Length: 306
Image (cartoon, rainbow, N blue to C red; front, top):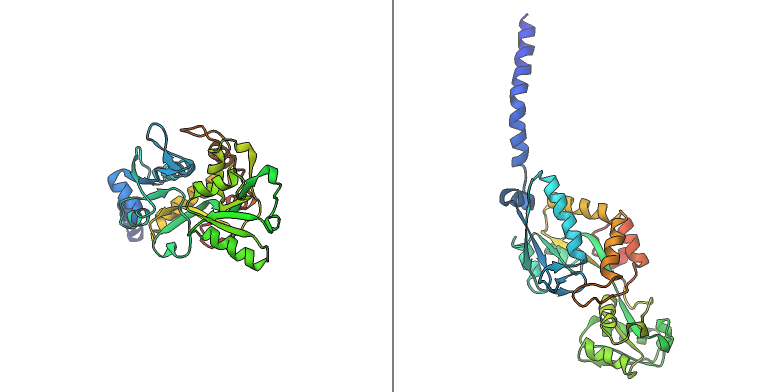
């Protein structure tokens, strides 16, 4: 009888202790997730002119490829925290302010075209790679230039002070191509040199070249090379460093999206269709490297990983 009473007492004690365990688990929230739970809001950092990743449309609304991805992360955060409502606040960021605003807690997610590299990982965190850019060249289709080797002995332009002009100069020396490398003061001048046949090619980040081609008088007249002067550099959604629970939610949301057919739909929307505000079509197909990165999501900042 005494044993039965002890068992009953133990069961009652366990039963009464169960409700207390629920609030305890809620109190275990830390970092960004706790902040979002406490305030009922998440703050998205956006760029005003990083087409097509994050920019303002003709209604001054932040839109873009990275913004669509961040919306999926917001949905995952709302679900993870079991919130009925989650207010989304928007905060503009620039190249100079984006890292400090993430680090000091003003912005929770930076949704744009920020390169993920080892140096930046010392200050901030990144979720899975959403784009890869490399240093390539644009030329006129009529020039029939298919490869870097085809540039031998020709005049090539790149923008002064960029890593791109350094890369083409190094390749020129290493491969003895005898290219006449001409520096331009800015991207517009460099593209104009190709447009007016003063140079056969312009070396720059491929996505920037795509934007210049899309905005040209005759986009169909140009082609961007498959050959690259650099390894692919990854872009990632930026978040705070040393916040594993929040990063786990972001990583889970992006990995699920990238492995699903929906990522092709979102990619086509921003890179292969007319986009606001000028209905430009960048006509950038989903490349093999990015397809691989989507199939096996990674937050690596090492270009060699791609």
